[in-house]
Length: 514
Ligand code: XUL
Image (cartoon, rainbow, N blue to C red; front, side, top):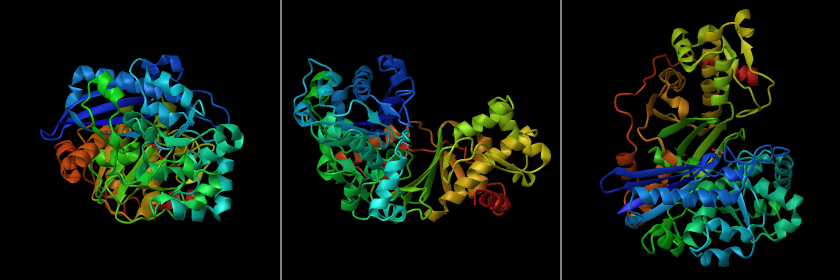
């Protein structure tokens, strides 16, 4: 009895199969879009050189990748033993389908590929994804129509945000009213793939649904005012919104025949990649915080109550395990660390050595390390701001600049996430840079919390497999998390600095950003 978790992310589609009874991962597979599907000309998973901030992907590429993935997986494990399936998708991305869609997915046949069969169903050939920033005007229009950003935020858990699906839908409706008129159904990446697996229209879960500026986070259902402010007759174009512990359907015969799954395998509603990762990191109950260090850094946590960011920078999503979660994105993550490293032509070893050589608090020298427009807080600086000695301010003190960059990132992260009112005892660090002990030490010191890392790296797919096993097999989700989300033994990083070590840095950074 196995459980399958899928992760449809920006650059790849991955799968993880677990045996919940034995407590082990049985198989893993991943298909990188750029490498395996070069015909889509999307080396990083999206179509390059979009105009006016547009970033789109070809949804047929996701379907081809799903098939390659299942083929790879079939060679690694017996898919007929899978008795529970769920998945997750990159958040916010949307797929526009015409009135042929339902009939088409109900009648998939194995003589043709998924992409060939679904192709006639697209009312919009490409899908805007989370990297798209083209909808500034639509965000302003939506906010104005419902009475301002504060109201949008109180209702939907976020102010109107460029990458969120509602503003994206509005832009499509305005720029291509005929295309919108022909759209019978709008899916998120997650619910699109879930529908394909079920051969029926799948609902959208509250985790991914809250990334649309359309879901009311108090009712956990579509909000009539937001729907109206976004596009006409939008409600009937959206599937139902449901909680994470919901069965979306059973696996379509297409997958039974083609990949050897058992008939009637239940599929649990998919969610967004971040809500899925919350589960896969073992943090779906309040008390633990996850900091993911990637292209952007993200901070997220299960929340004890529904609370929105009064500054309007953070987000509230549904927690797939029930209740809500918070999420805050920092655009200047790995790219900022890399930019400072490259400025001095350092490698990662000298970068780490610089952190080890320099004192906590950096002798009062601080940096606002924003190389590109930041969203937490919203500010468009041409270059980082440096305050300290003349040498430091002129980028002539490499070691101090490196420490100031990392300290500046996490002190800013602490300042911007105070609205969540969390006092974490443990921070789970994940993502590429999480392996760096010197960076982890700064995180521990700034947040005055222990930092731990998990043994498993694919937390999104693992979260999906755990949700599937819990929901379809009736297993306790928290016990499954306990079993599968083990921290790296003996590698806890304890805070070393005193609790007021970063007070002056915090005051300086808040002042520079005021
Ligand atoms: C979250 C966000 C990204 C995407 C892609 O709001 O935009 O984290 O989910 O991973």
